Length: 490
Image (cartoon, rainbow, N blue to C red; front, side, top):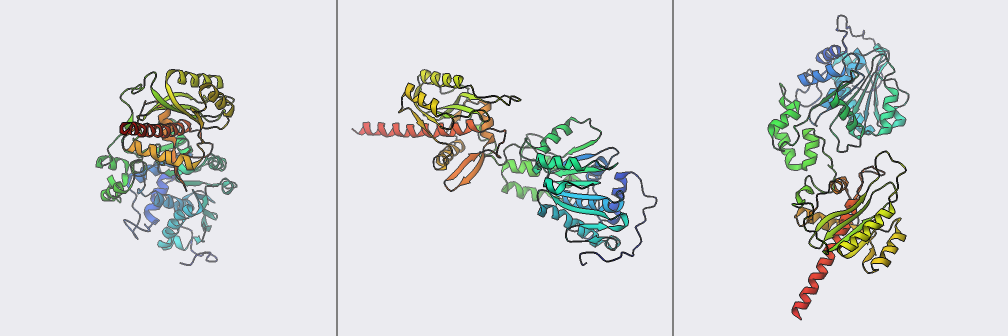
């Protein structure tokens, strides 16, 4: 079929006399009678909604529901379902319906549009009643009802009056985009914002906030359905796969176990849990693999540390917004938190207590045989100079963590130590949180760690200090070993 307008459409409007008034039942019937499956299982045949898909439609289009969130793993037909519902909106939705498809970018939004075009073109009665353009679909018989794909851009979302807004992959939607979505929805007596998405990997997101509220329940204007494997299940638990993936466990399934088995061999554990098991897993982009940090926790919190022991400290300071960390490391590779100062929640004018930090540094030098204090100099130059005067200029040095030429080798050294279990730590939960917040970034000098995004509230300062402390501790250990070898041969 040639894209674009046909001129005057001569076909009489479709007759929906006697059809149910109920929004969900009306759309289920339309899909059953008019939608042809474009590809995959059931290709070129009438679309057969599985029971879980009907449940999604009934819940989302229930009376009074304004927004719906469906959290579901990949491979469960969410794009095809979204396209079918968008096409149904054009014909059995309200007069002058607007079905907007919002995705992370225009290319992704156009994927759903392409499915919708194919569904219309495969059914002659729909094809002769719709204008199919390159970038949209218009159905004149229903007041020029419109299907329009849009990128998740606030500027692109203003000025619309949607009866149905489908959001593809809500976990990538920003606060600004969500504010724009909220501002244009709800103008009609009946409308629905339907988000169908895989889980994200960041609890600092719009989707996670909605998941938390959805799990609580109790809001008659919202519908929430989550398909996820039980927490803590084994990766190869086939029953857990079926729980998470309704397209695998339903009648006439269209997702196969061998497909997931193939994915299991190719995906890292946190990614498999997120995309294929529907689980929220922090750190799919993390610097360290899932569970690696926990695996090197020492048997006891104070293990390996004693007064007078030779240790190295690293200091990563801030003024107010970020955290300030003083992390120690023994020469045999045991990390511990000596001090960690973080801004309390809801205290915007908080500043790092410098006197408390200075006291902690002095106490550390008093308690241990401190070989070295490696300091990131940003905003703490005067304090560092005072520490050097008090504790020895040869023991207090500048160690700029912003320099990849220095940080990359140190980052690689600690990564290898964790993976080979050649390192331990004191199990401090705040240090663990900073470690889990680290995202790996490739530079021309090697891998360094960074925040997941600029100005993220998730801090990594303690992790950066730990990397520096471990690197310097192992350097001094290596230096000591060389001296011992030299003296033994003398």
